[in-house]
Amino acid sequence: MDLVRFFTLRLRSPAAAEDLVQDIYLRLSGLAPSIEIQNLTAYLYRLGSNLMLDRLRGERRSANRDGAWLDSETTRVGSQEISAEPSAETAIAARQRLALLTEALKELSPQTQRVFRMHKFAGLSHPEVAAAIGISRSAVEKHMMIALKHLLARLP
Image: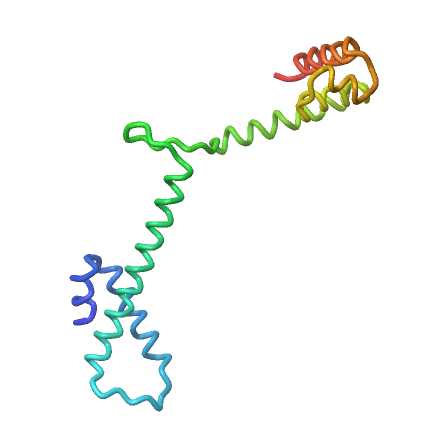
């Protein structure tokens, strides 16, 4: 009980002190029976102090690491932290919309799909798409119009 009170004062938490005393006894039970301890009380307090310092250092490292991550992944606006990551609901809605888009694209002719993918996904301009496929720029524009009209009709 003295150990718990001693570490409660230092840790300012009865639960943390009890966990620490448990750790002390676990370490003590793991010692080889042949080891002889001259002053058991002093040994327990020293062991507890070392474990407490290790725990505090680990918590400080975790707090620093978490703080650095939070600083790199969020932006502060006043007292609010705003994450660059979308919310779970937004991510799920985007996946569902992408699945609908993929299905709607499959309904188009292979040539229209190819033109759309090259222009929208690969980032090629209309003249670049025309040159790559071997069709006129006007044909690329017509395929894009067909694709966009179809997608607008199919997607909510």
